[in-house]
Length: 92
Image (cartoon, rainbow, N blue to C red; front, side, top):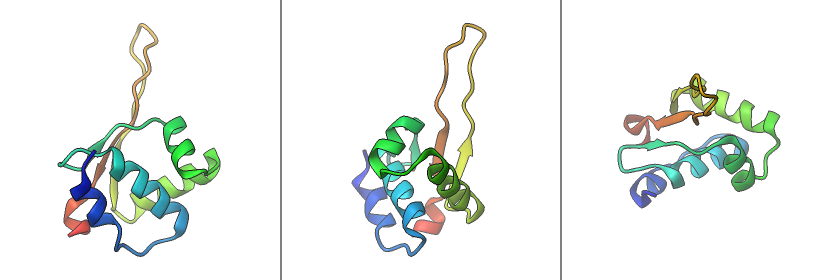
């Protein structure tokens, strides 16, 4: 968890669902703005439906507040979370 990243996010103005998702991801981020929370975690932290969560993530990505490297699974079926990277230059 990075308090530095979370503090940078508080003043940003955006739609409430996007702000909730941004803050949840920031709470999980390291000092470089990288985080790996799963959908279930983000849904629990934001109280959003899966549809609303996906819309908010798309909004953050479209507005370049967030870059996403999509997860997947390996040949053994192990699933990997998305890697979210907060755009620190936009947060300063």
